[in-house]
Image (tube, rainbow, N blue to C red; front, top):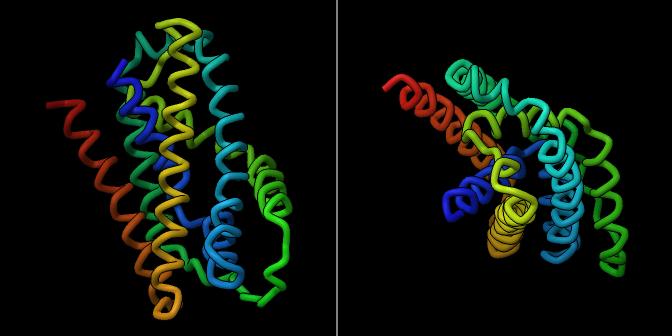
Length: 207
């Protein structure tokens, strides 16, 4: 069970960490409105990710035999996709569509939460990311029962929550010194980590 929690936590972090539109929106709101506006933006994304994770976990039983028979090849494919995704994150310009606007700090947290939730929920590509991560970490709590599914979702949620909490804390703490170059460095660091995880995964699979 501890292994399940650790894997779920890592998946929660990895599915949240890439600085896509939601990550940039979180940083933007943190810089422009304050830390908690950014944090509630992250919470909205986390809820959406958990819904997609639940969909994956409740349907994974149909693919259980596939995972069992082709575990090695799926892990290699998952690692390869992770490498490609990490490279894309590394080479992507996080400032391309970023146009900071200074808005009234009276904006409600609920609005930050639900706009982020709706935006993330509309991105069904997150299912592909989850499939990749589940395969890479051989993450299949379904075989342990309903209780394990709940624990897995809680672990994924905790991982995502930790990421958004840490990100907004760092951005808020460095608010006076945070510039656009810092965003690029953060993006490239995340991309590098994803690539390394993919490479290590392939090495472990065969050795």
